[in-house]
Image (cartoon, rainbow, N blue to C red; front, top):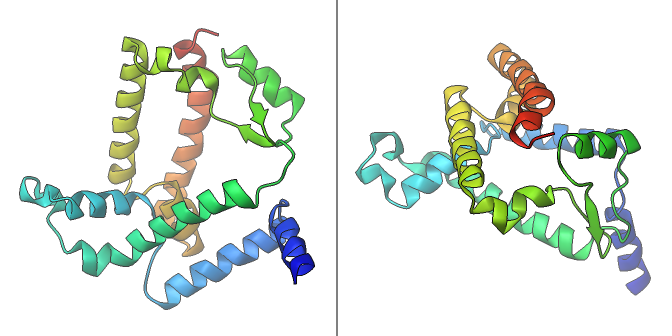
Length: 201
């Protein structure tokens, strides 16, 4: 029994082939469609604000979140718990391998290379999580303004990356295809033009 548990843990801690992970995503999406649901994360923020009483002062949050988004809130809680269990108990002991060109580019735009501690790779640039940056005028502006832009963009587009790229595209939605193309254009623009300006490459 112990050896079986060890084998399962070893299997779960390794990267899965694309055809296994892809098939599992398809299975989840089919189950959601079969039950009349669509996957998305940004809608949960609206439900969370409504649950905390924001509907009393803003009409956008005044809706029956338990009836329409209650299941999605449970999904988000489950995803957070699953992520914690995965990170703490079944992640591999080796740091994530990153390509030399990726590390070289990250350093060229002003960030230090990702580090690994106890086999866990920290992909968040140290410069962004450094308290000296977070509590500086520049850091506060970037983090707050960036968060507002992400929130506004997700609502204006009718969904976030998971809602459009996973749920919307799997249902062959043209608006989701347009949104995903926009996500890629925005991501490339940020990576190659705006980040170097912000962080002084």
